[in-house]
Image 1 (cartoon, helix red, strand yellow):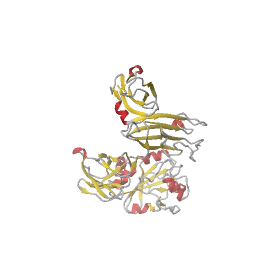
Image 2 (cartoon, rainbow, N blue to C red; image 1 turned 120 degrees about the horizontal axis):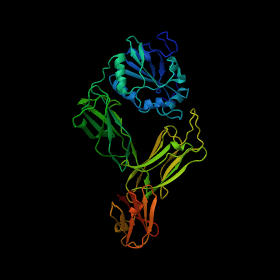
Image 3 (spheres, rainbow, N blue to C red; image 1 turned 45 degrees about the vertical axis):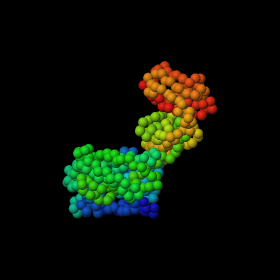
Image 4 (spheres, rainbow, N blue to C red; image 1 turned 180 degrees about the horizontal axis):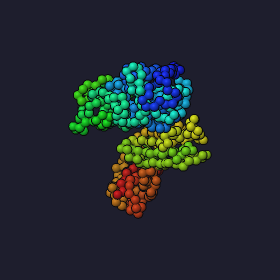
Length: 503
């Protein structure tokens, strides 16, 4: 993004004599020139003179339906197929009204850096994004409701005929343009490689790619390279579904082999062949593989989740998951409170050597743990916060205040939780799984305590060690699930933790 301040240049050339009512389908387009968020200017008639179909998307940063349509990525996928890196037959120009009326502030808003927008309009978007300062182009077309999408078909003379399409997906957009402007040719063998930021625990990465067909031909095979610091370390040749194919705009998931990665290295992936045809270098075929390396370390077998909501607690939920995606603890939604924060503390047992992901969500997808965001009229009487700490006071995850729709944090548990290995080896717990009675053999340890807790850290029972064998009957509690048995000596030092499954 260019940091210099620019004034939005909008020049109007009326190609017809229509007034300020939105021109009906079949009308001539109205020309304009505008500057995008990167400082580049775009003139509608230039693209029409090149014979391109132009899609105008009228939106606003404070418009939730506009953001929802943007997040479908329908126009992004369509641009991949028919924009410059595809068949180069289409240009997309979103015209977005902003709360900020100077160029620099509007660009910050479009980048999602201000609270006056529902999200980022530029992240992951490869077509130009234009701030419509003062709504001048909206007014030119007399746009009343947003989002509004207009398709402009070139007339061969630098002008065009417009049709309102509605907010269509990429499949229906193709059909609409074919019927309104004539069939698009497309590009024969064209794919787009996609990758979602991955979490790396103990330097082991299992890359997962999504292949999207943005060409005319069905895709039956691809070749992908994974590079570390620009050196190829893995080559994947994939026959789609063992002999199938991917139709236009459809996707296919490719699970790559596990690689050992280094946090000091840079990783990328390249789609080098589609249907045996060598691809061209572009954002479609070469992508960065960004990772999150888990660094915070838990040193105890139990953590404490601390949640303090803002005054809109009914919008907040949270989850703690292991790396298999299993939810081991969760909470919310909470009650709204105009003056008093809702506070919650939950103890959760964790397993040695495992990695965990904490997710806190604002179900209204607006302002996280602080609703102060003019011009929407909400006020934040106080900010909320969250924190996860282990029993030694180490802060593993923390945050709060404003965030868009969710925040995530990660931590891993030491493989050895300072447990006396000699004592641990003497202790046996059986049968596991159990259908009722559990026996704990503490060997030579004849004093201390046995604590049994559930997965959220709630204590079920605490028993003194009075002999070598201790017994506990789960059937008396009429419950099934996962429990943790902790053995401690008289000083409270942990000797052994074992997960027990009650069937």
